[in-house]
Length: 125
Ligand code: 5GP
Image (cartoon, rainbow, N blue to C red):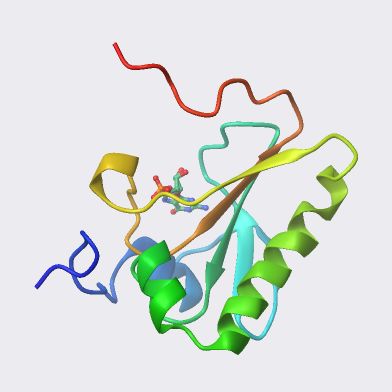
């Protein structure tokens, strides 16, 4: 049964395997509730992914099912990772479901920066 436009949590997804240590990552930060690491295909000079340690398939799943501690822990980790970019600014992206193009079905936050990032969403056509 799809949950929030996505199938149920798949314990073999790539970020679950990174959390289990089965696949390496370039770690930036690890806290009780979150792990941050460099994106394998960076779209900007800084492109870091922050993921919760719990098994949440999407932004919607995380926001409705995670505990207050997990939610705070994730967003505090995002702020910590983004701190070096504060002077020039940065963009936070959370893709959720089919129309967003979400590829990995484990909730994650992208932090992008290090250059002007252009338009927020590509024009249709
Ligand atoms: P989404 O499109 O789901 O929001 O973003 C998934 C992101 O995960 C993409 O930016 C992609 O480059 C990144 N990614 C996919 N596989 C791996 C991997 O094995 N390691 C790392 N570090 N990033 C990955």
